[in-house]
Amino acid sequence: MRNEVVKHHNDLNSMIMRKWTSEEMNFFFSVLSKAREHGTTRLYFDTYDLKELSNFSKKHNQRWEDTMENVARKVTQLNYVEKTDYKIRAMTLFNWFEVDLKDKTVEIELSNNFEYILNRLSANFTTYELAEFTAIRSTYAKTMYRLLKQWRTIGKKEFKIEEFKVLLDMPKYYGPSEIDRAIIKPTLQELSPFFKNLKVKKIKRNTRGNPVTGYLFTWQPEHTEPWLENKYDEQPQNNTPTFDDKFTEWLIRYDVVSSNDQELVEQFKLEVYPLYQQIADRSTLDNVAKHISYVAHKKYTHPVGYFKKAAKEYLDRFI
Image (cartoon, rainbow, N blue to C red; front, side, top):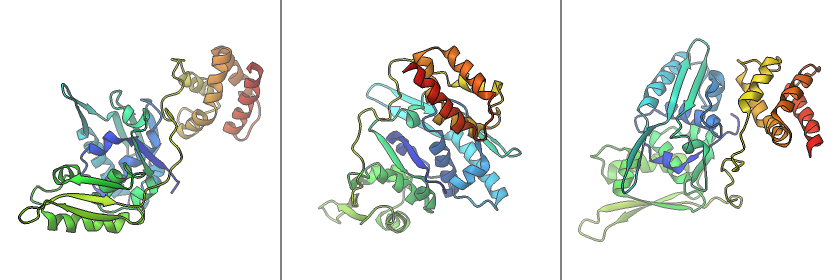
């Protein structure tokens, strides 16, 4: 599995996903890992690629189709509720979620209101490796993994008992013994490889019977690079228009890429489009179109590398 990273706003951790199976969670967060930083652009995924990302056996096609159908149904029920002192706002995650079982593709489009959950990140975000998440089997442990990763550099997090029950959507009748058996033990067993020295302490009230009032999770804090202010904000912030759709249109027109080859288009977006954007900013958009037309008639084997090199050389004229 590739070293994919899942990164999303902390608000997503408050969404209840207890009724999702482990495989459905793997698929859902695999999609999120690929969709981040693409705005509300409609995205296409190859099913086999998602199977690899979500650690799903390629042999079980029928179970995969069942999983995809269940995810599609559950996505429509997945809502986020934002509450302030004066307002309550509910919003859905996707405008569009389509699984083509014949062509083995997945097509998604984020809703405008919910875009910030993935694409407008500030210091208030959760990040973790997808390979770790998909290796966890218990759905309770998966939820705890996401919740604790939010505090990965702090090394501790206390949950009040009522908050704990809501976040994990556990049955109302669960008492301390059921919580120990179904949640605490699987969490310690499955998450210890990812959180060094992970421990759980019951917080008890000093009254008759010593009732459990919460749980304190502690572990060795992660060390990360210094935080850079606005590191994940949209760039630039000067309202300069971007022309990704135009770049794609021209690449397709001159037979550089196919409209069906989304993977190649995404590679261009990551490696070449930023150069085209600089050319457009420093000269004109028409110059980008002429440049693409000129380079498209050359002979090349690796289009992304060739067009990237050509764009760098062309950009030098305007610096």
